[in-house]
Amino acid sequence: MPANNWVSPKVFRRRKIAFWVVLGLLVLTGLVYWVALPLLADNRERVAIRVAVCGAVNRPAVYSMERGSDLGMLIRRAGGLKPGADFFRVDAERTVLNDSVYIIPFRGNGGAAVRLPVVPEGLMNKELALEGDSLFLGKDGRELQHVSILYVGLPAVYVLITFYPELNRIQCTHIPFSTRFLAEDYRLMDLFFTLDIRPTLHIVEASLNLKIDYFLIQDRSGFISLIDRLGGVDCNLDGTYAQGVGVKPGKGRLDGFGAWEFIRFLDRQDARGLDVRGLEVAYDARRHRQQGMLRAMRSAFGELDTEDQLKLIARIGELFQTNMDRKFVLSLYRNMLAVPEFSFGTLPGYYSAEGDRLFFYPDIPGYRSLLKREIRSYLVAPANRKQRVY
Image 1 (cartoon, rainbow, N blue to C red):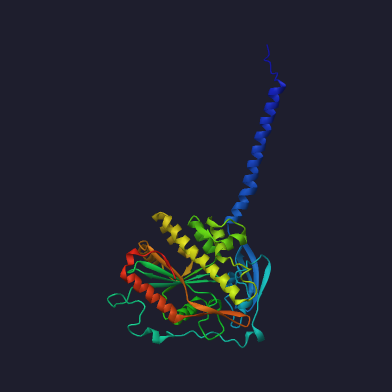
Image 2 (tube, one colour; image 1 turned 135 degrees about the vertical axis):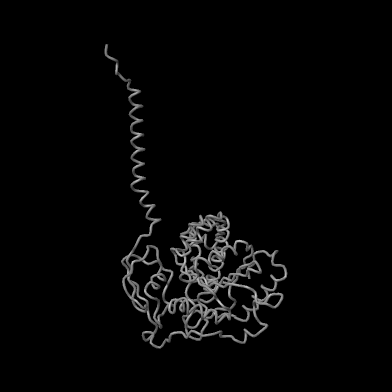
């Protein structure tokens, strides 16, 4: 007798619903796999774009750049600026777009009247280097061991990092990008993009009368990769930044891209026009964010286990352009592991507008006085100092 295959309408409806639910889930899974994942992968991969630059650059041409690159990175690819480039009128932080042409302007008369800055051969303030006036004399009168590094975060972040093994501390001094070290009409940022790193380093060390041993240069891609390899950073998001980008103020977790946007944020309301007071407020606020980011990066690095820290150090060549060799970096890393004390500061000085140009004039004697006072305070009881900001 044949089996009864009859199914009630109620059971049939349930099976039909189950069939469509399963089919819908399969379709949704396929959409995620074929559509969403490739889009997410694009955000992780380096996508090339074609961008042209001409005018006051050394090698005008069409270049292949990574998507998200800024104009400062493009100018570096083009061999830097020619003498006489009007970099005051260039937004080096602007993100370049695919199939676009960027013209770097000259100053009046094609920049012909502007000379290339003269790089000093030795110390500019030799009277400050007299015997007994050294910043780095210990309690017994001998020279303190120290290593100085000039960090350049393209295009506008310049920080002098000095490591004192005997004092068990690291000092970070922010140098405003508009600092005028020479008589010529060049800011620090103009010097770097015109002369490149080594002449700029010599000018900075001659002006400050301090020996600088190494340099670190980092662009947008390297910075974002570094933050992502740290697993993100915890930063205090100030009210001005939070209001400007539409987020909640207070402590927040930032990935590489978010950290990049945080340190480059400039309140356009404060920086409206070329009002010196407004620009000072905007630049000072941004410097505080950048110093906060340095603290957050240090904290995130300290939270990694030793193996991950060493892996990150081993890939320094991918994250920075530097004249340090890997052996020295590892040696520096081992010494810095035991350094609990950081201090953060800004080169003292004042802003001054000259026509439509804004310069920062450094107070070199004041800077040296601050350093002396700071170093001598650590000679008293270096083991019990808190993180300091001057």
